[in-house]
Amino acid sequence: MLVKKTSNKGRSYSYMRCTDCKSGGLGIPAPDALYLALSQRLLKALGSFPVQVREYAEASEVRSEGKRLKESATYYMKELEPGGRYASSAFAREQAQATLDKLLKDLDAVDPATLQDRWENVHNGETWRERWESGGLEALEEDARRVGIKCEVTRTKVKGQRAPDVSLRVLLPKDAQDRLVIKEDAFAVEL
Image 1 (cartoon, helix red, strand yellow):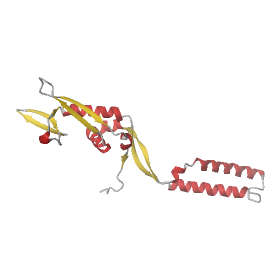
Image 2 (cartoon, helix red, strand yellow):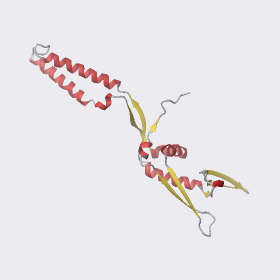
Image 3 (spheres, helix red, strand yellow):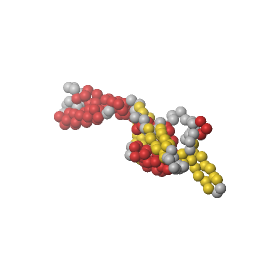
Image 4 (cartoon, one colour):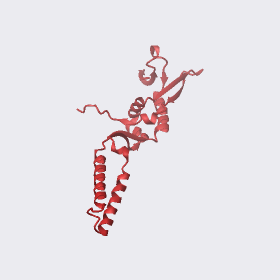
């Protein structure tokens, strides 16, 4: 849909025309009211979801920490064996056993999924409602286009009235929440 503005005899008004229809199709008056209804429906359907940004999480720190824990646990296990460094006194054995138990507990707490480099969806602290209210109609339009949200506008002639009755139907993809995740272009060149 394309918004047209016309002025005639000092008065200006705006209307919408379909860009795909032959000869512009039939006009729809008051595009601002249509945009307001659309934005209200999108805010109601998706506004409460958190804004998530996809980020690349490198696991090098977690891998090095896991390696350190394994090496330390191996060292303490070796030295606790008979003839080892901590086998001579009861106090040293108890301290080494407590340290080994702590190391093994920390090693078990490491999630195996975090040992691989991966993409994560991170909440950036705001909801879609807040983002769209601060960014205006342009931000809402950009995100709706990126997600694949479609709006079906129907115009019905009303007898005895020049302006038609306009109805609006918003078509959300089933996976709209997943598509809303903001994915930065990793190959974009910053100038």
